[in-house]
Image (tube, rainbow, N blue to C red; front, side, top):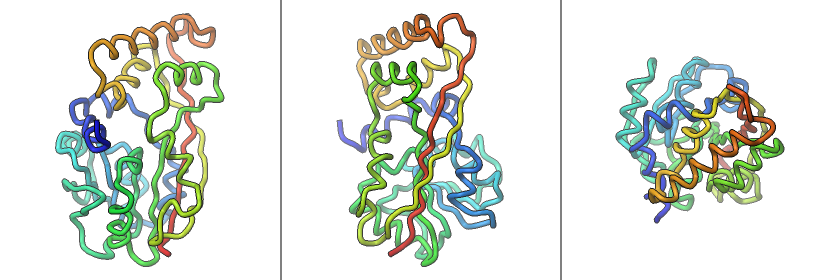
Length: 247
């Protein structure tokens, strides 16, 4: 399965994705986009989890995503949006130098970087900021580490740590500033299963693999000493935020 096929797997589960995935800490978004209202382009916006957080901080947000099902959920769930447009990071439907900030929440790892980075630079204003952000499970917590042993690490989880490496953002951009923010999402056992079901490795798996994943996650929730017998618990996250300026 190609990278693009995996990236387009979420539309079939847009409602589930929107309900199961965590939001982003407001302090992380304030660090990314600044305190003053700005023209923000949210690329790979999905169902709008990041979009809505940026709007809540007073920014003027245009959302772009290649999946019409995800955009339909975004527009239904989001108020105060400047525009929602079908498009991809490699061919943005916006004019030159039209954004102060370009964000990408849980999305930058799906981009074809050699094609996307010059296009992102085209749309970004000279003093603007490219701002990818990822919510990563905090695997320093034992039960979360066990969960990763079951489901594996996603491409986004692998790339979020690699994005700090020199030259990652190519010749159009400088080296990134990086900050990590901690937060949590309350869950119960069913919500933990739904979270796993919202991931590309589940959505692109065959029925047998899906049943195997659900059974293993249910067993973890029933037997791990930190989870067994508890009606609710918190998924801990480390949010990796990047600010990258044009070279």
